[in-house]
Length: 114
Image (cartoon, rainbow, N blue to C red; front, side, top):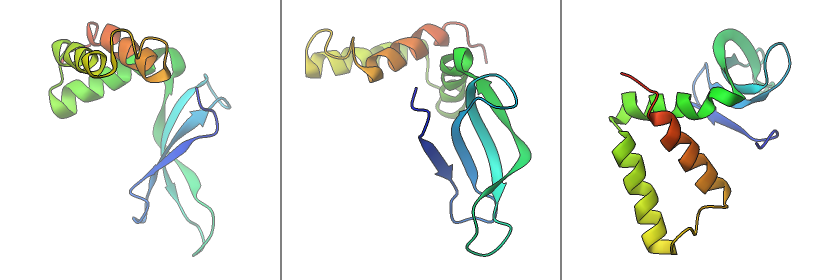
């Protein structure tokens, strides 16, 4: 897990959403929170509007988002793995971080119901 990375969604809006690692004030996980800038040019400040996804539930959360937003099924995810392996060679992604992520999401997709 990259504990220093953060992604800012809607950065140009008045209420950007920041996605980042968090381990204070709750379980370790990914914090998805609306922010604001109190002064023009100031630092982004978190609001109470948001949620934290515990680390051990991230794959299931992502699988659920993919299923809801894009109607991605477990078969679709398996197809992605097959395409990557056919392009890069058998087991090319197995030990990589992306391989671990895709496999975790693939396993979690089984548990997601929409």
